[in-house]
Image 1 (cartoon, rainbow, N blue to C red):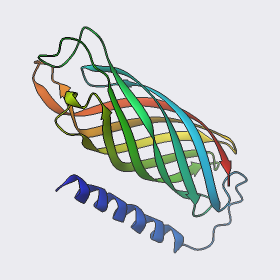
Image 2: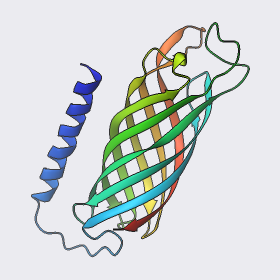
Image 3: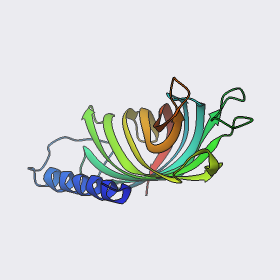
Image 4: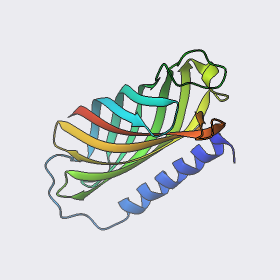
Length: 193
């Protein structure tokens, strides 16, 4: 299946989950922080890559959120992330480490599971390499990202794992492989529109 096919499949699953959740009976829960409507959040991300030759990651993002109900929301997120290489490590034939800059574009589904503040979220989309693209065979990658977080009316803190399926990595034996992972923390400020 192509990247576009995987993205379409993920989007259809998210839409199906949205319609399944809206057909349930009206909720009796009274959440203060997430009444139905639009929200916007601006976040900073920091993380650690789980694959060589990348080490740390830093980024910023903007997330739009539409609250379907007091417990379920749809999200759209974009921004910029930089995966840093150490100067000693690098791909074969590379004289010095080169960072990989990318722009993620992802859609997600957020479900509040406890006290209308703790949530689980899944996102899928694409990551577009925009700097040092000679480090990778593909300039676009499928992106998958589950996360767990805590949100108040204005603050959102989450722990996430992001997997870039088509970007190159170094295997333990020094050969090239596919798929770069990153564990990260996101701290964001959000507000209702």
